[in-house]
Length: 171
Image (cartoon, rainbow, N blue to C red; front, side, top):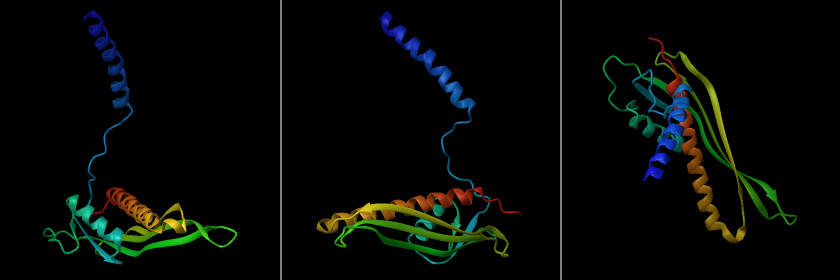
């Protein structure tokens, strides 16, 4: 019994300074983003990233698109210029058989107030992933490709959420 009590005391002595150090360095769990605007309208290309972003923003409490906008609130306008997937051959055998592909997801956007004032200038985000390819395993490689595109879409959405949360709309 005394041995167990000693172990618990040692754990406590070690854990308290560690917790104090973490709180002193500013560590905290990520919270839901806080936006300086209450409504957003998505204009332009309506691709997979735009759809996922709209769903994420709605879940975050924003009025999106055709959602009812609170009285007296002007929505910011997210203009989606490009939401494009690309697939390029980057590796071949001596006989010309494809061995490696590069998947890209290109997302270009601009954010403006309803009056046209730029909040975020035209910006392009480009994600790339490499994937091996075998002609004998086309179906599994297609499933892997779809999974990589979904992961890139989710990554782009999270980048956009962070960027939108950092924007300060002037009154």
